[in-house]
Length: 196
Image (cartoon, rainbow, N blue to C red; front, side, top):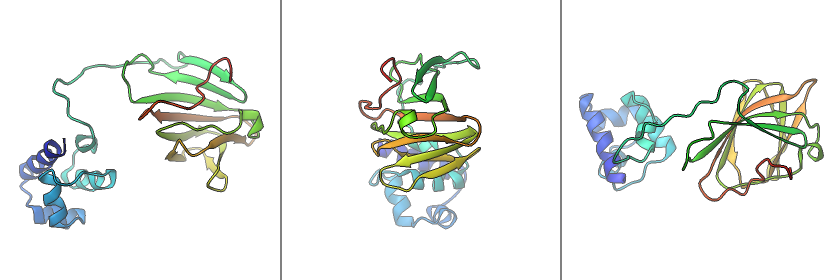
């Protein structure tokens, strides 16, 4: 895959009539680094992909997604308010676009009403990463490794799901979130169900 990705970078660069030195100067990466990437001798990180994609003016996913021999043409739609709902202590999860098989992420609208860790089910953890964006209200994120973090409307956060964490609602009304969980390995997250 690294060699195919390197070839994609090379072809995109050449299409824009850029030399390795041009790309180096514009991206801040060394010519040596770029040469290793193009020749499949170095794996690309998200940070490197973002820098290169910005210069080449292509979506960063061009460099991060594994190429498929036959492109898929799937889609999943959840109309507003029609996602499957799971209610747990102090939290309401609405599952979004859940009908894909073999997906790599879960997507949720989450409403947090609990005003303490006890009121939202306590600590939780899972493999992969968790992305949260506050759509409305104020959220306090608790983790075992950091001080509590207050997030307001429009704020977003990405963190390792294996780090124990919990949510608390601050303010007068509930906190409404958009959440995505990657499923890199078997999920250990206490997924919302009747048990809470």
